[in-house]
Length: 283
Image (cartoon, rainbow, N blue to C red; front, side):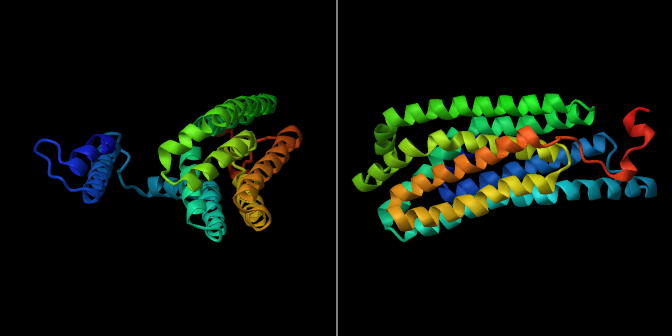
């Protein structure tokens, strides 16, 4: 709905007014309002908004479990853009052309890694279902498959950007200096996305197993202990090229650590003592 309404209100198509950026904001608010009303209607239809003491007790217990997993997972999700902000601050010490190139690079990267994000989304329910049933070997095999798929995708994007990087850069930035830097970034960093894919797949699987703090350690550690410092060290040593090589090293190292963890971790489901009753285990 948001995608459909945006161009109508931004450009003023037909009976809709030409609101520009204000139209984008209106479209977003409208789409979210409709989605919220639809969600409330669905909850009412499923009789999930009925208030009772027993339901409230069940809800509090469920909310506590959700918060236990979701709080570290949410923090983990927010640390990656925060690390990129720190990297942007490092690039800002170089010059305007470098900042422009890095800004476009992150946008191109966000599109290129969508298949890796799909892997991570699938790994959580897969790990939860199989390890929850005691089949931890299936979860381990799945994560090794994720690593292989991530490696294949990273290789494909690396080859594509190696040969088409200059063309892509020329389409997104007008400055020749920015285009050169963007092409340089696209020729170095994409191969290391295999490491990023392994980390997010493992982190998502650990969230599915209820081990959210461990997941935070892998994803947050990559962002704050490797990526952000690598950006500043790289810029200090080798300017924009140093940044690209720093990103490659950070992704590669974090991926190697995550792959070792896939091999060594038990990958069993974390259970609260009170949750292991007969009703939930089928005993």
